Image (cartoon, rainbow, N blue to C red):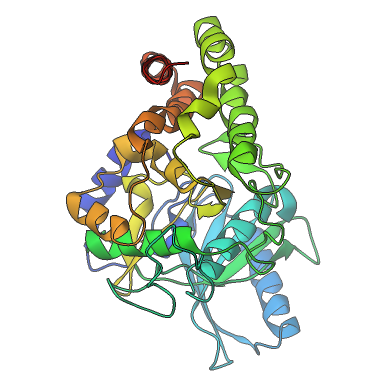
Length: 378
């Protein structure tokens, strides 16, 4: 989700009673509408959804569907809050699409949420002296991010369409920024594991996904480390967006004055290791669920933790947030010089999505990178 949608969300917040809860996934890349089933949803498609839901619950050993309440729809998907007879299963959020297969519609979302869920369980964190790792087994500073557990995603068995089932969360507005900062830091400190989808400790992700509506390539790097990160970020982030933008000034500036000297920006960093990133962390993607901080609508991948702040210009990160975050991950030397490199990716993406003045901002950040490299004595 981009900053352009912040206006829409603000209007909705004025119209909707704050006591009403929404599931995490209703605010997503495909948008949402409120109320009962959309008038565009036919009785036949509703029946299909109910049949597939009942089949899934039974086949999964969760018993029968005891209630199914429509939460609305978008142009592509319908949303339901579902209860099943198994008392050990929480309330569920069921998102379905009758026009696209699961691989295209829900695979990236499922893998992203699963990785976020695994990396917010405080079971594995980096344990050397590079960070303040008193987080192991601790809930100091407000605990972890609240991420919905994904139960299943797949194609319909009896007709065309697909669905994803996850835990239903009572989504509320953003609350304690200090706790949010601590929780995001804990996520960044989580070690890559097989369960979180990164058994080799590399940069990238299991599947390609999107940043807004822009494709985001996530092919794995050849292991972790500073050199591997620089190569990954150059090819799969900046150069990907530059190719889409087609701006000769930015491309020439990157190829001639920045890329050959890029390692200079990272000389003060001992060794960059993969952190799980939300990937699109701005104010519209931050909230709370059941009293805990929550982040949603991600563009997940494993990368340098500093790359998370490429959307900080639109995130409203307060001093309290940074106090919480820096209590666990102190600022590395040279961060200020590297920051415009990470900002440039998101400004380029916004230009590719919306055009207009974002190109000027992208150029300005790339020029700032060049200026910083000149100052460092390339």
